[in-house]
Length: 353
Image (cartoon, rainbow, N blue to C red; front, side):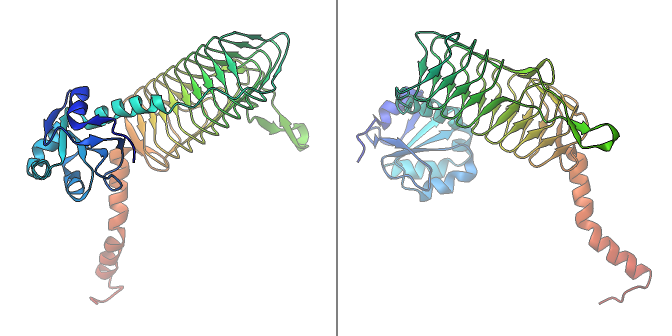
């Protein structure tokens, strides 16, 4: 059994929460409502989840104030039965605070020392850490506080900023620049060749287009496992500061991604696509080459972006259209069989049965 990290009273003080129920409940971990036991803390952001709390065994729950107000009887019954309710302005934010605290204690250990290959012209700051079997090419610069876990490979003239963490198996190819405080998860490839071809003259095969640019990743960017970002034909493929990219995302050559964008798993951006600041792409979105998605726009999951999207709009569907237009089209398609049946009846093509 895990030793308690807090009592319910201590946790309430830690979060500035309003305590309902006993203050001496021992709590040692965070968990979902379904899996929680008497030592666990969970959270409820909306009143519709209150019955799940009532059916659970968790010892304490973080509840958004609005959710509590809408289902006070359910939460008060739990508190009267010896369980603890911690009312906070926003349960999601309170849980993020606790996750960050516990996550710091679960941070991975420093890379295991081992053989590395570092070109004599590379400059590795003494405050940087290289794990076993890393390869650092000519002219590279690795700043203080950077951590390269096992089997990271840097090509020629790569720059890694202060405090950036490259997890096992990351590959950063020639001339790429990674800013400060970035995190690249296992298997990320930065700066691979762009996918550029055209028919050879006379129709004799396929001609490869050289890509001699680079990739620039600005500060505080996080890139998920096995995501690939291709280098530019010329100039730079660029990812703006604070952008977060999920696993298995493909970013084509010469794309420009703005600041604080969110790109969910399995998205694909064709060459020269532009995402302005604050864009959100849900899972599996495809963006055609050369298209621009305006500042603050959102694209729904599995959508195919074939046209430019104005700033602030929400588009969904394949091909993507403004959300209201797509919903009208879906509603019309749902009604189509009944409409056809009525038309056939009017034309005498079927009987009443």
